[in-house]
Amino acid sequence: QGSQPVVLPDGHIVVLFNNSNTKPSSPGDQILAVTSKDGGKTWLPPVLVGRDVVKGEPQCNTGDGNGAEECIPGPFIRADDDPRATVDPATGNIYAVWNDYGYQRYDVRIAESTDGGVTWKESTKPVDAGAFDDAYMASVGISPLSHELAVGFYGSGRVLKENNRRRLFKPGQSGVQAEGTIFYLATGKSALGPFSIVALTPSFSPPGGNQAGFDGDYTGMAVVGKIAHPIWSDTRNTFRIF
Image (cartoon, rainbow, N blue to C red):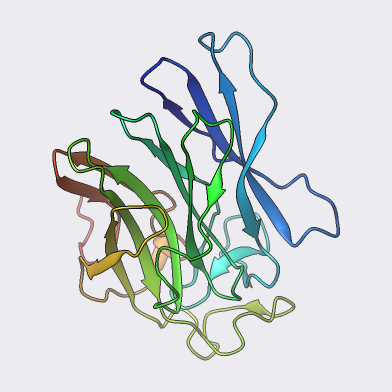
């Protein structure tokens, strides 16, 4: 799921996606990429972009009809591990971000390809550097002038025994649907970091009412010149019908 296409300066197409068709002994899913050099007529075999560790991820039932699924218990919203990607128009280097649970918390992972998507190198350190309780739903862009990376992501507080996957988290439990969320922007000169991180929002409340269980399934990022333009959703605005 979560296909993310990018087009390289030479016209090659690279599509990244999340693959959960892994061995039962695997600690999680995979971020894979396939490349076409002829406009999509044929595709090279998939290659590994990075690991997506899901072992221990918390589970919630947000009432969307899918039953128990991975979630962020603090704001009580469903989560996804789908990748987001960007291409440096000058070098053709590709950068991909996603979140996983490799450190028994949600962190933002990043990987880089310098050969048109043929091979990838995943950073050993998360973008958020473990500085946040849960960091997730990332987007990425790159400056065509400075080649500096911009990564946007949410950060939320954790709840008691969050990585006990056998527990189904529900509103009313300690901390569930009670932790605030902040949207952050991280910038760095390399996928290896370090990243400078600033908060773009004050802490906002978990979604409620008909919106409970959902916030920012997807985020976006565009970089124009040296200015990053992240896009996200939060709960500070009141919806009105005109």
